[in-house]
Length: 393
Image 1 (cartoon, rainbow, N blue to C red):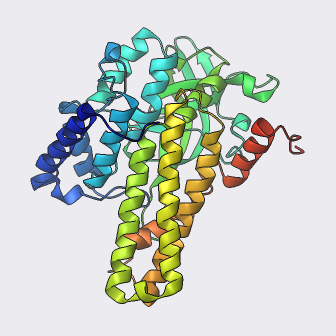
Image 2 (image 1 turned 180 degrees about the vertical axis):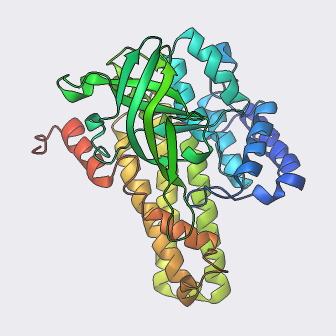
Protein backbone atom coordinates (compact mmCIF):
# COMPACT_ATOMS: atom_id res chain seq x y z
CA UNK A 1 0.00 0.00 0.00
CA UNK A 2 1.15 3.52 -0.80
CA UNK A 3 1.47 5.13 2.62
CA UNK A 4 0.94 8.58 1.11
CA UNK A 5 -2.53 10.11 1.37
CA UNK A 6 -4.38 12.05 -1.31
CA UNK A 7 -5.76 15.55 -0.87
CA UNK A 8 -9.21 13.99 -0.55
CA UNK A 9 -7.93 11.72 2.22
CA UNK A 10 -6.37 14.62 4.09
CA UNK A 11 -9.59 16.61 3.75
CA UNK A 12 -11.44 13.67 5.29
CA UNK A 13 -8.86 13.51 8.08
CA UNK A 14 -9.48 17.19 8.84
CA UNK A 15 -13.24 16.56 8.81
CA UNK A 16 -13.23 13.74 11.34
CA UNK A 17 -10.57 15.39 13.52
CA UNK A 18 -12.61 18.58 13.61
CA UNK A 19 -15.81 16.73 14.43
CA UNK A 20 -14.15 14.86 17.29
CA UNK A 21 -12.66 18.06 18.70
CA UNK A 22 -16.06 19.75 18.55
CA UNK A 23 -17.94 16.91 20.25
CA UNK A 24 -15.50 15.26 22.70
CA UNK A 25 -16.11 18.09 25.14
CA UNK A 26 -18.82 19.32 27.45
CA UNK A 27 -20.92 16.38 28.57
CA UNK A 28 -18.63 13.96 26.72
CA UNK A 29 -15.35 15.27 28.17
CA UNK A 30 -15.66 12.64 30.88
CA UNK A 31 -15.48 9.71 28.44
CA UNK A 32 -12.23 10.72 26.73
CA UNK A 33 -9.74 7.88 26.96
CA UNK A 34 -12.10 5.65 28.95
CA UNK A 35 -13.66 2.29 28.20
CA UNK A 36 -10.69 0.72 26.43
CA UNK A 37 -9.15 -2.72 27.13
CA UNK A 38 -9.18 -3.41 30.84
CA UNK A 39 -11.54 -0.46 31.40
CA UNK A 40 -14.66 -1.70 29.60
CA UNK A 41 -16.84 -1.32 32.69
CA UNK A 42 -16.25 2.43 32.92
CA UNK A 43 -19.02 4.96 32.27
CA UNK A 44 -21.21 2.64 30.20
CA UNK A 45 -24.27 4.88 30.07
CA UNK A 46 -22.20 7.89 29.08
CA UNK A 47 -20.39 5.92 26.39
CA UNK A 48 -23.69 4.53 25.12
CA UNK A 49 -24.92 8.10 24.75
CA UNK A 50 -21.72 8.81 22.81
CA UNK A 51 -22.44 5.79 20.60
CA UNK A 52 -25.85 7.16 19.75
CA UNK A 53 -24.26 10.53 18.90
CA UNK A 54 -21.86 8.77 16.52
CA UNK A 55 -24.85 7.11 14.87
CA UNK A 56 -26.76 10.36 14.62
CA UNK A 57 -23.87 11.94 12.71
CA UNK A 58 -23.20 8.96 10.43
CA UNK A 59 -19.97 7.69 12.00
CA UNK A 60 -21.18 4.10 12.46
CA UNK A 61 -20.98 1.72 9.52
CA UNK A 62 -18.55 3.91 7.57
CA UNK A 63 -17.24 0.92 5.64
CA UNK A 64 -20.59 -0.74 5.02
CA UNK A 65 -22.03 -0.70 1.49
CA UNK A 66 -24.30 2.21 0.65
CA UNK A 67 -26.99 -0.31 -0.24
CA UNK A 68 -27.43 -1.06 3.50
CA UNK A 69 -27.07 2.54 4.65
CA UNK A 70 -23.30 2.73 5.12
CA UNK A 71 -20.88 5.32 3.78
CA UNK A 72 -18.83 2.75 1.84
CA UNK A 73 -15.61 4.64 2.54
CA UNK A 74 -12.35 3.34 1.12
CA UNK A 75 -10.03 1.25 3.27
CA UNK A 76 -7.73 4.27 3.46
CA UNK A 77 -10.43 6.56 4.80
CA UNK A 78 -11.60 3.93 7.26
CA UNK A 79 -8.03 3.74 8.53
CA UNK A 80 -7.93 7.51 8.87
CA UNK A 81 -11.17 7.49 10.86
CA UNK A 82 -9.91 4.89 13.34
CA UNK A 83 -6.54 6.60 13.69
CA UNK A 84 -8.05 10.02 14.34
CA UNK A 85 -10.60 8.54 16.73
CA UNK A 86 -7.82 7.00 18.82
CA UNK A 87 -5.64 10.08 18.53
CA UNK A 88 -8.45 12.25 19.90
CA UNK A 89 -9.00 9.94 22.88
CA UNK A 90 -12.32 8.62 21.62
CA UNK A 91 -13.81 6.27 24.25
CA UNK A 92 -14.04 2.52 23.90
CA UNK A 93 -16.99 1.76 21.67
CA UNK A 94 -19.90 -0.01 23.35
CA UNK A 95 -21.15 -0.96 19.89
CA UNK A 96 -17.94 -2.33 18.43
CA UNK A 97 -19.04 -5.99 18.52
CA UNK A 98 -22.24 -5.14 16.70
CA UNK A 99 -20.64 -2.82 14.17
CA UNK A 100 -17.35 -4.64 13.66
CA UNK A 101 -18.37 -8.30 13.91
CA UNK A 102 -22.11 -8.94 13.65
CA UNK A 103 -22.96 -6.31 11.03
CA UNK A 104 -20.36 -7.42 8.44
CA UNK A 105 -21.51 -11.01 9.03
CA UNK A 106 -25.14 -10.06 8.37
CA UNK A 107 -24.11 -8.09 5.27
CA UNK A 108 -22.12 -11.04 3.92
CA UNK A 109 -24.24 -14.03 5.02
CA UNK A 110 -27.63 -12.66 6.15
CA UNK A 111 -31.01 -12.41 4.46
CA UNK A 112 -32.53 -9.14 3.30
CA UNK A 113 -34.97 -9.26 6.20
CA UNK A 114 -32.09 -9.67 8.66
CA UNK A 115 -30.28 -6.70 7.14
CA UNK A 116 -33.40 -4.54 7.45
CA UNK A 117 -34.07 -5.65 11.05
CA UNK A 118 -30.62 -5.51 12.63
CA UNK A 119 -28.36 -3.12 10.71
CA UNK A 120 -30.32 0.14 11.29
CA UNK A 121 -30.33 -0.29 15.08
CA UNK A 122 -26.61 -0.99 15.12
CA UNK A 123 -26.02 2.04 12.92
CA UNK A 124 -28.07 4.27 15.22
CA UNK A 125 -26.18 3.04 18.29
CA UNK A 126 -29.44 1.83 19.79
CA UNK A 127 -28.81 -1.91 20.17
CA UNK A 128 -25.71 -3.40 21.79
CA UNK A 129 -24.43 -6.89 20.93
CA UNK A 130 -22.25 -9.52 22.58
CA UNK A 131 -20.59 -12.64 21.21
CA UNK A 132 -21.48 -16.15 22.40
CA UNK A 133 -18.62 -18.36 21.24
CA UNK A 134 -16.52 -19.70 24.15
CA UNK A 135 -17.87 -22.33 26.53
CA UNK A 136 -16.32 -23.92 29.63
CA UNK A 137 -15.24 -26.91 27.53
CA UNK A 138 -14.84 -25.11 24.20
CA UNK A 139 -12.40 -22.23 24.21
CA UNK A 140 -9.77 -22.45 21.49
CA UNK A 141 -11.55 -25.57 20.16
CA UNK A 142 -14.73 -23.77 19.10
CA UNK A 143 -15.98 -26.80 17.16
CA UNK A 144 -16.44 -28.54 20.52
CA UNK A 145 -19.29 -26.15 21.46
CA UNK A 146 -22.13 -28.04 23.17
CA UNK A 147 -24.82 -25.39 23.63
CA UNK A 148 -27.95 -26.84 22.04
CA UNK A 149 -30.50 -25.24 19.76
CA UNK A 150 -33.65 -27.22 18.93
CA UNK A 151 -36.48 -26.08 16.68
CA UNK A 152 -39.85 -25.92 18.43
CA UNK A 153 -42.54 -24.65 16.10
CA UNK A 154 -41.53 -21.16 15.00
CA UNK A 155 -38.75 -20.77 17.59
CA UNK A 156 -35.28 -22.04 18.32
CA UNK A 157 -35.04 -23.16 21.97
CA UNK A 158 -31.54 -22.62 23.39
CA UNK A 159 -29.96 -24.48 26.31
CA UNK A 160 -26.38 -24.27 27.49
CA UNK A 161 -23.68 -21.99 28.81
CA UNK A 162 -21.29 -19.44 27.33
CA UNK A 163 -18.36 -17.91 29.16
CA UNK A 164 -16.07 -14.87 28.85
CA UNK A 165 -18.98 -13.04 27.24
CA UNK A 166 -17.68 -9.47 26.98
CA UNK A 167 -20.31 -6.87 27.79
CA UNK A 168 -23.10 -9.43 28.28
CA UNK A 169 -24.64 -7.55 31.20
CA UNK A 170 -25.21 -4.48 28.98
CA UNK A 171 -26.16 -6.20 25.73
CA UNK A 172 -29.52 -6.36 24.00
CA UNK A 173 -28.62 -9.25 21.67
CA UNK A 174 -26.10 -12.08 21.43
CA UNK A 175 -24.90 -13.99 18.37
CA UNK A 176 -24.16 -17.61 19.23
CA UNK A 177 -22.69 -20.77 17.83
CA UNK A 178 -25.03 -23.62 18.83
CA UNK A 179 -25.07 -27.35 18.20
CA UNK A 180 -28.08 -28.22 16.06
CA UNK A 181 -26.92 -31.73 15.06
CA UNK A 182 -25.19 -33.56 17.94
CA UNK A 183 -24.35 -36.55 15.72
CA UNK A 184 -22.63 -34.66 12.88
CA UNK A 185 -19.08 -35.62 11.97
CA UNK A 186 -16.73 -33.91 11.84
CA UNK A 187 -18.17 -31.97 14.75
CA UNK A 188 -17.99 -28.50 13.18
CA UNK A 189 -20.67 -29.59 10.66
CA UNK A 190 -23.39 -29.70 13.30
CA UNK A 191 -23.13 -26.05 14.34
CA UNK A 192 -25.51 -23.19 13.52
CA UNK A 193 -25.14 -19.42 13.97
CA UNK A 194 -28.13 -17.98 15.83
CA UNK A 195 -29.16 -14.50 17.04
CA UNK A 196 -30.84 -14.34 20.43
CA UNK A 197 -32.41 -11.46 22.43
CA UNK A 198 -30.88 -11.14 25.90
CA UNK A 199 -33.86 -9.56 27.67
CA UNK A 200 -35.93 -12.65 28.41
CA UNK A 201 -36.50 -15.00 31.39
CA UNK A 202 -34.40 -17.81 29.90
CA UNK A 203 -31.16 -15.80 29.86
CA UNK A 204 -29.11 -15.33 33.03
CA UNK A 205 -25.93 -13.25 33.05
CA UNK A 206 -23.47 -13.72 35.91
CA UNK A 207 -20.66 -11.15 35.82
CA UNK A 208 -17.20 -12.59 36.54
CA UNK A 209 -15.86 -10.24 39.20
CA UNK A 210 -12.09 -9.78 39.11
CA UNK A 211 -9.72 -8.76 41.90
CA UNK A 212 -10.11 -5.16 40.72
CA UNK A 213 -13.83 -5.34 41.51
CA UNK A 214 -14.70 -4.95 37.83
CA UNK A 215 -16.44 -7.46 35.57
CA UNK A 216 -15.76 -6.83 31.91
CA UNK A 217 -17.05 -10.26 30.96
CA UNK A 218 -19.57 -12.78 32.25
CA UNK A 219 -20.87 -16.29 32.34
CA UNK A 220 -24.13 -16.48 30.39
CA UNK A 221 -26.69 -19.26 30.92
CA UNK A 222 -29.47 -20.10 28.46
CA UNK A 223 -32.33 -22.18 29.88
CA UNK A 224 -35.10 -22.71 27.33
CA UNK A 225 -34.38 -19.26 25.93
CA UNK A 226 -36.23 -18.65 22.68
CA UNK A 227 -35.60 -16.81 19.45
CA UNK A 228 -37.61 -16.83 16.20
CA UNK A 229 -36.50 -19.45 13.70
CA UNK A 230 -35.67 -16.77 11.12
CA UNK A 231 -32.86 -15.55 13.43
CA UNK A 232 -30.42 -18.08 12.04
CA UNK A 233 -27.64 -16.71 9.84
CA UNK A 234 -26.72 -18.99 6.97
CA UNK A 235 -27.88 -22.58 6.70
CA UNK A 236 -28.89 -24.90 9.52
CA UNK A 237 -25.72 -26.83 10.46
CA UNK A 238 -23.77 -24.42 8.26
CA UNK A 239 -22.79 -22.04 11.03
CA UNK A 240 -19.09 -22.91 11.06
CA UNK A 241 -18.38 -20.96 7.87
CA UNK A 242 -20.41 -18.02 9.20
CA UNK A 243 -18.56 -18.07 12.54
CA UNK A 244 -15.18 -18.12 10.77
CA UNK A 245 -16.35 -15.22 8.63
CA UNK A 246 -17.16 -13.24 11.78
CA UNK A 247 -13.67 -13.86 13.15
CA UNK A 248 -12.14 -12.71 9.88
CA UNK A 249 -13.76 -9.29 10.23
CA UNK A 250 -11.69 -8.69 13.40
CA UNK A 251 -8.67 -8.10 11.16
CA UNK A 252 -10.02 -5.02 9.39
CA UNK A 253 -9.18 -1.34 9.16
CA UNK A 254 -9.82 -0.82 12.88
CA UNK A 255 -6.39 -2.42 13.37
CA UNK A 256 -4.89 1.00 12.65
CA UNK A 257 -7.00 2.54 15.40
CA UNK A 258 -5.77 -0.13 17.80
CA UNK A 259 -2.21 0.79 16.90
CA UNK A 260 -2.88 4.46 17.54
CA UNK A 261 -4.18 3.48 20.99
CA UNK A 262 -0.92 1.61 21.48
CA UNK A 263 0.91 4.79 20.47
CA UNK A 264 -1.02 6.73 23.10
CA UNK A 265 0.07 4.18 25.72
CA UNK A 266 3.69 4.31 24.58
CA UNK A 267 3.60 8.12 24.71
CA UNK A 268 2.40 7.90 28.33
CA UNK A 269 5.24 5.48 29.17
CA UNK A 270 7.77 7.90 27.64
CA UNK A 271 6.20 10.81 29.53
CA UNK A 272 6.54 8.99 32.87
CA UNK A 273 10.12 7.96 32.04
CA UNK A 274 11.07 11.59 31.40
CA UNK A 275 9.36 12.79 34.59
CA UNK A 276 10.91 10.25 36.98
CA UNK A 277 14.33 10.05 35.35
CA UNK A 278 14.04 6.47 34.04
CA UNK A 279 14.68 7.84 30.55
CA UNK A 280 18.37 8.17 31.53
CA UNK A 281 18.64 4.41 32.14
CA UNK A 282 20.27 2.95 28.99
CA UNK A 283 18.35 -0.33 29.27
CA UNK A 284 15.03 1.47 29.59
CA UNK A 285 15.96 3.71 26.66
CA UNK A 286 16.75 0.62 24.57
CA UNK A 287 13.41 -1.00 25.43
CA UNK A 288 11.53 2.20 24.59
CA UNK A 289 13.32 2.37 21.24
CA UNK A 290 12.43 -1.29 20.55
CA UNK A 291 8.78 -0.58 21.43
CA UNK A 292 8.74 2.40 19.06
CA UNK A 293 10.26 0.32 16.25
CA UNK A 294 7.86 -2.56 16.87
CA UNK A 295 4.90 -0.23 16.57
CA UNK A 296 6.15 1.02 13.19
CA UNK A 297 6.52 -2.58 12.01
CA UNK A 298 2.91 -3.23 13.00
CA UNK A 299 1.72 -0.23 11.02
CA UNK A 300 3.50 -1.09 7.79
CA UNK A 301 2.52 -4.75 8.07
CA UNK A 302 -1.13 -3.73 8.52
CA UNK A 303 -0.98 -1.38 5.54
CA UNK A 304 0.48 -4.11 3.36
CA UNK A 305 -2.04 -6.70 4.54
CA UNK A 306 -5.08 -4.44 4.09
CA UNK A 307 -3.99 -3.40 0.61
CA UNK A 308 -3.65 -6.96 -0.65
CA UNK A 309 -6.56 -8.87 0.81
CA UNK A 310 -10.28 -9.17 1.14
CA UNK A 311 -11.24 -8.56 4.80
CA UNK A 312 -13.60 -11.54 4.67
CA UNK A 313 -10.81 -13.85 3.53
CA UNK A 314 -7.68 -12.73 5.40
CA UNK A 315 -4.23 -13.95 4.32
CA UNK A 316 -1.98 -16.05 6.56
CA UNK A 317 -0.24 -12.85 7.57
CA UNK A 318 -3.17 -12.13 9.91
CA UNK A 319 -1.91 -14.90 12.21
CA UNK A 320 1.61 -13.47 12.06
CA UNK A 321 0.22 -10.06 12.92
CA UNK A 322 -1.75 -11.40 15.93
CA UNK A 323 1.35 -13.02 17.44
CA UNK A 324 3.45 -9.92 16.85
CA UNK A 325 1.13 -7.28 18.28
CA UNK A 326 -0.05 -9.43 21.20
CA UNK A 327 3.53 -10.16 22.28
CA UNK A 328 4.54 -6.54 21.68
CA UNK A 329 1.65 -5.21 23.78
CA UNK A 330 2.39 -7.67 26.60
CA UNK A 331 6.00 -6.45 26.63
CA UNK A 332 4.81 -2.82 26.65
CA UNK A 333 2.87 -3.59 29.82
CA UNK A 334 6.04 -4.94 31.43
CA UNK A 335 7.97 -1.87 30.28
CA UNK A 336 5.32 0.43 31.77
CA UNK A 337 5.62 -1.21 35.19
CA UNK A 338 9.43 -1.06 35.10
CA UNK A 339 9.31 2.62 34.16
CA UNK A 340 6.87 3.37 36.99
CA UNK A 341 9.11 1.51 39.43
CA UNK A 342 7.81 1.30 42.99
CA UNK A 343 4.80 3.44 42.07
CA UNK A 344 3.53 0.52 39.98
CA UNK A 345 2.74 -1.29 43.24
CA UNK A 346 0.46 1.45 44.56
CA UNK A 347 -3.19 1.92 43.61
CA UNK A 348 -4.29 5.50 43.01
CA UNK A 349 -7.17 5.12 45.43
CA UNK A 350 -9.33 2.67 47.35
CA UNK A 351 -10.45 0.02 46.97
CA UNK A 352 -8.60 -0.75 43.73
CA UNK A 353 -8.46 2.42 41.65
CA UNK A 354 -5.75 1.88 39.06
CA UNK A 355 -3.97 4.22 36.69
CA UNK A 356 -4.25 3.77 32.95
CA UNK A 357 -0.83 2.13 32.73
CA UNK A 358 -1.63 -0.26 35.57
CA UNK A 359 -4.89 -1.30 33.88
CA UNK A 360 -3.00 -1.69 30.62
CA UNK A 361 -0.42 -3.98 32.23
CA UNK A 362 -3.07 -6.26 33.73
CA UNK A 363 -5.05 -6.44 30.50
CA UNK A 364 -2.02 -7.20 28.33
CA UNK A 365 -1.54 -10.48 30.19
CA UNK A 366 -4.54 -11.70 28.18
CA UNK A 367 -3.42 -10.42 24.77
CA UNK A 368 -1.53 -13.61 23.90
CA UNK A 369 -4.55 -15.74 24.87
CA UNK A 370 -7.78 -14.22 23.53
CA UNK A 371 -8.78 -14.17 19.83
CA UNK A 372 -6.54 -17.16 19.22
CA UNK A 373 -3.63 -17.80 21.57
CA UNK A 374 -0.03 -17.52 20.36
CA UNK A 375 0.15 -21.30 20.36
CA UNK A 376 -2.94 -21.59 18.16
CA UNK A 377 -1.61 -18.95 15.76
CA UNK A 378 1.70 -20.82 15.46
CA UNK A 379 -0.21 -24.02 14.63
CA UNK A 380 -2.12 -22.16 11.90
CA UNK A 381 1.09 -20.81 10.39
CA UNK A 382 2.93 -24.14 10.59
CA UNK A 383 0.10 -26.23 9.14
CA UNK A 384 -1.65 -23.90 6.69
CA UNK A 385 1.26 -21.75 5.54
CA UNK A 386 4.38 -23.88 5.88
CA UNK A 387 2.65 -27.20 5.17
CA UNK A 388 4.11 -28.94 8.21
CA UNK A 389 2.44 -32.09 9.61
CA UNK A 390 -0.62 -31.46 11.73
CA UNK A 391 -0.16 -31.42 15.48
CA UNK A 392 -1.16 -34.73 17.07
CA UNK A 393 -4.75 -34.44 18.33
